Image 1: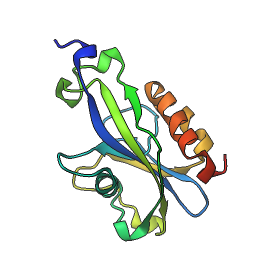
Image 2: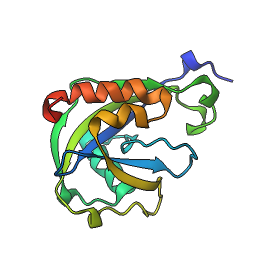
Image 3: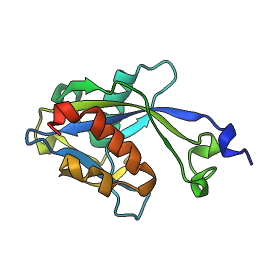
Image 4: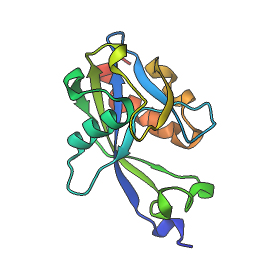
Length: 160
């Protein structure tokens, strides 16, 4: 088995999607029984730029069309998290030790009816709007610091 320190980080994007009331879209993963909620995120395909990946991932996970999305901000730095040791080798075919993520803050201009998580490769079993300040308490513990960093990156835009 490859040592964690020898594994690279998976290049990814994350999206903090705000509705008109300033709430953030979160979903519960379909492959987990935990009560944890997370923001949409996913890998950047080979040759794909981060902005395109953010729109693609959001569409794949929520069914939201790009016409209902506006980019508000992009994080000023790459954010990272490590998988806990017990998950190394069990997810992502053992290829990664965690993720390097480029985060985007987007505004949702559509209606809740424009959100459909029953996508061809469904990742969420449920979704809801959450207060930004609640995000670190809603995520799995190993991503708590990441969510605190995301909130810090977008603090001005969120009025925090």
